[in-house]
Length: 138
Image (spheres, rainbow, N blue to C red):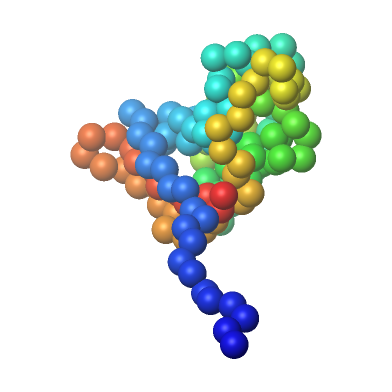
């Protein structure tokens, strides 16, 4: 008698984001996280938060930054409406975030994102601008 049968299951969601410069590509990646979680049209920029994140290289910085952005929802039930990068360089990002607490009556959820992964994480300059790639565990 067979008690179990393994099956394939895709539990990842990947994105590519673009920007005219390094600052914009990280900014767009941060916004993409919350845009995948909820419908940002209904989020209001009521509260301001500041975050500072460090990383060994561009990819580590991207993953650490997105983990901080993801924690706002997963850990604090807070949604992002606007994000601006103040400073970026030497393995460090300083950003100002605007948003509000999650309200089930107004904010519809799209995806549950569990984690940001290092798998295939990439940040690079291209002839057209900057490009970042990251995969999330959903």
